[in-house]
Amino acid sequence: MFPIHRNRRLRTNDSIRALVRETVLTPNDFMFPMFIAEGTNVEVPILSMPGIYRRSIDLTVKEVKELWSLGIKAVNIYVKVGDHLKDNTGKEAWNPDGLMQQAIKAIKDAVPGMIVMPDVALDPYSIYGHDGIIKNGDVANDETVAALVKMAVSQAEAGADFVAPSDMMDGRVIRLREGLDSAGFQNVGIMSYAAKYASSFYGPFRDALDSAPKEADTSASSVQVPPKDKKTYQMDYANRIEAIREALHDVEEGADIVMVKPGIAYLDIVREVKNAVNVPVSVYQVSGEYAMVKAAAERGWLDHDKIMLEQLYCIKRAGADIISTYFAKEAAILLNE
Ligand code: PBG
Image 1 (cartoon, protein in one colour):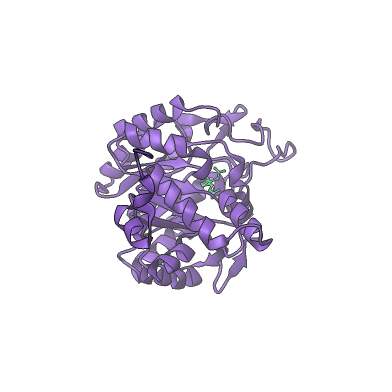
Image 2 (cartoon, rainbow, N blue to C red):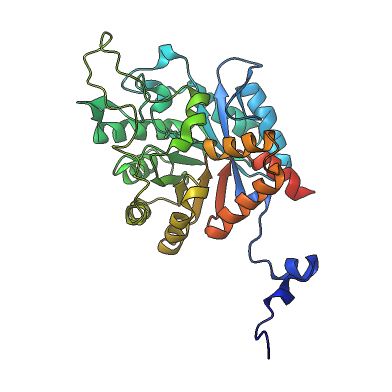
């Protein structure tokens, strides 16, 4: 008999393909990353991310209501604060009336069911654009972790459901867990950016928040500043085993969800982490991945909607339980049709 296997039988038409499809994608799989601006009625387009805006809290709330009506159940929150609020301690990060804290309150008041996951890292508050406190030419791990605990507790006080440390300091998950618990926030979860690579795919995000690592301003301070990259804390993209180690450590320290970031170029890592841990895995399809699709589609070189769905399905197939993506709204609209 030839051929022995007729695998094409299961691809004959839409119906049989639907019956045997292994991966299902729904709006419930998505988290939407949102950039918050100061002021009211502010909506600033991010030029390197067509369709994405930095919005003041009032307009953010409007958008969150729309996301909710589309079936999206979680948002990741990032803020852009004025330069006068930045220093090398990050203290604005735990200001109870800070932009982040106000945004969390406003969103939870308007849409109580929406899971709000603020970012925990000092970069939006750092004069150096780094995720922690700079000392002796590098980010000081333990001092930074202590600051992050204050930040996370103040986010929990504002009503955050989960906190999402994206800083890549060592030992921050266990300290965040202890800090949240002792402040009475046993039910506030931790989604750790466990395998976060030092990636050039974050470029447009840093445009959105004006948070790129800065050149040293030697006149203003005597602090020795590290290089303009985050390679002493984010991971080397040549490494694989390290990602498993990071994920296992974070689970051991109490992470409820572990994240792999970026997405598409790192799907081997997603699969390996998924196989190694027994908690949900989230994947961040980051700003640069979004920008590439938008740019190619604008030129008519790729079919936007098809590429968007293909990428999201592939991320899910690789092992993502949750996908944080700037496409969340557009993809939800398509999937709901
Ligand atoms: C900062 C943070 C970054 C992103 C999420 N949190 C930037 C960075 O690490 O420099 C990037 C997300 C994206 O590119 O969409 N802690």
